[in-house]
Amino acid sequence: MPGGSIYVQPNEKYTGSSPQWWYEKFWREDAQNRRRTRYVKAGVAFVIGVALALRFDLTGASPLVGLLLGGIVAAGDWYLDWRSFHATAVWRGARRGEAITGRMLRRSLSRHGYTVLDGRAIRGQASIDHLVIGPSGVWIIDNESWSPDTEIACYAGRLFFSEKYGTKTAKPLVETAEAFAELLTRETRVPVTISPVLAVHCGLLPRGGIVMAEGLILLKPRLAAKVIKSAEGNVLNDEQIELLARTAARELQKV
Image (cartoon, rainbow, N blue to C red; front, side, top):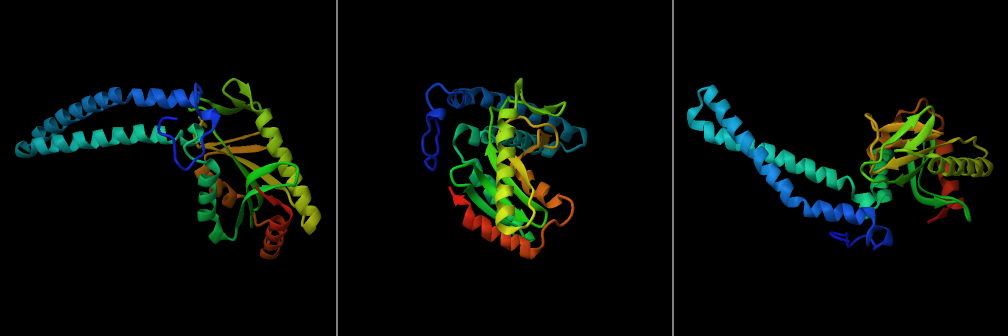
């Protein structure tokens, strides 16, 4: 794969004529056009900067002001291009979504009394990327990515990925949450309800970065910890959190 990461094993999904492969190929082939456009923008900014300097009687400094404004515009344009490409890294197979989300969760939640367990499964059944246990309750979080132009939205309570229904994505994760909750409740005798979350690494979420539909919360990875911490009330005390975390570590298979 063009520009593939040495840290991620090759996957047939991201090679050959896959959408990911073509996206990266066209992106690199279009680099010259993007640079040309950037130069034009910087040139226009230079002229504007000179004109502004002359307008405010800064004749001697006008070239410097023009160069400064042109440099700022060029740097900003480069950053926006890089950011749009970097946002597709998980979808392209260059990075692992579970590693990104797990790092964010631990950094934001550990100091607030939450335990984060990565890669857990009920033996012989469903698996999830992250199990979070803390004052606001228990959460399971999976990671997914879609093509950059896929619109993720809720209409009349139903989940949509562009024109396609999202039930096949939501239902298994909701059922997994129920199975995990049943196991933890049975083993600890602590009533547990688990909230399922899907961290979306690539795709178009509405303004705010959160969609709630069919019992599932879909959000940008950076918002996961915020949503968990902002949940109403303290559902679990320290003893219950420790018991649930210890039981989960023992009963749930690590994957």
